[in-house]
Figure 1 (cartoon, rainbow, N blue to C red):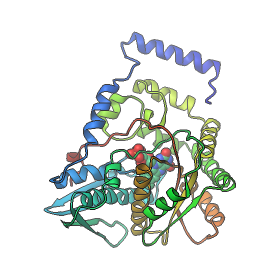
Figure 2: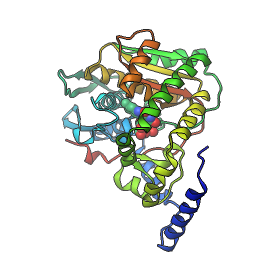
Figure 3: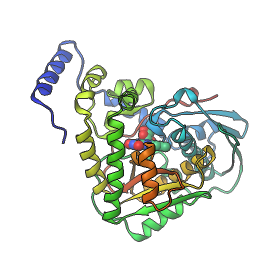
Figure 4: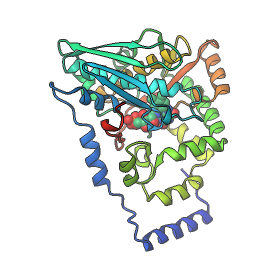
Amino acid sequence: MTMLSRRTVVGSGLVLAAAGAAGYSLWPRMGDYQATVEQQRRLPAGDATVQELVRMATLAANGHNTQPWRFRLDGQNVSILPDPSRRTAVVDPDDHHLFASLGCATENLVIAAAALGRHGEVVIGPGADPKIDIALSSAQPGRQDLFQAIPLRQSTRSIYDGQPVSAADLARLEAAAREEGVTVLIFTDAADRDAILDFVVAGNSAQMDDPAFVQELADWIRFSSARAVETGDGLFAACSGNPVMPEWIGRRMFPLVFRKDSENDKYRAQIRSSAGVAVFIGAAADPQHWIRVGRSFQRFALEATALGIRTAHVNQPVEVSQVRAEFARWLGNPEVRPDLVVRFGRAPALPMSLRRPVSAVLA
Ligand SMILES: Cc1cc2nc3c(=O)[nH]c(=O)nc-3n(C[C@H](O)[C@H](O)[C@H](O)COP(=O)(O)O)c2cc1C
């Protein structure tokens, strides 16, 4: 639990009183928010346009919800390109998360297309700044359950129910994540979860001691539903189980309540309540493999969603380079770069996150 000092409580009381006097409503306009969520998350029908497939792609997981992608359409060909203006240079200096996010979007697009009777042939380009080309052609309609999971998948950053996931479900998750050039390790023993938790706490502590990391994160938080709807991006407080408040109050409160000890306690409770942790490892540390890792993760998360299992990233062990090297050693292979760390288990849903409209992401 976050401990607030007496001074903080008195101070925030004054801030809240001032907000009331200034005519701000402290009750968020969640109606607008929810209506936008529902409109963005409609499932398209069989005659869907390529733009509708792009809308499905944008519902993919992506770092800090920056949506670092642009889509170029040419008939039945779609190219997904990185959007460098949406880099997060502090948490992701080499664009690892950016390219993994493009992989997540690719997977959503291909799964939606398959369910609607179109095969998507994916070619990942060469070099340090690859684009992803997807050629669509008609085919028999494919799996529907992963498609239907696209608008329901979310990063659920809450305490889970502490119950194990059955061996049959673990096998389905493993099968869903299978991708050439990607290894997925699933840890369900309490001792392994606690060891991974130690890496999360080490990484989180280093990040919270870095003012540039905290500032970059704060820049992407949306404290009010109005601001979340206005930008269509970023981390809306309610999606992380945090209180919603007017933007200017949130910005003042954030440094007071976002503390290393309470954040580490939160991660301890979250990871110990999870059924397990999945670690995704690409065979090489380059953008092509990061895209593949993203595809593998997105399929894992969609299969989980279809099974009623929640997922949430706890990537601190792979985001801080020194912790990452120690984590690779713990995984038994100091040569590899572990890419993603994801906990899973069962819990109620949190509010869904928003996206920018398709028109804003067309190149
Ligand atoms: C490559 C990558 C890294 C991520 N890292 C984290 C993380 O460390 N912590 C976290 O809470 N969420 C993380 N996320 C989840 C994103 O914040 C989330 O996908 C985004 O806010 C959109 O929300 P949604 O997943 O509920 O649609 C990551 C997602 C991706 C694709």
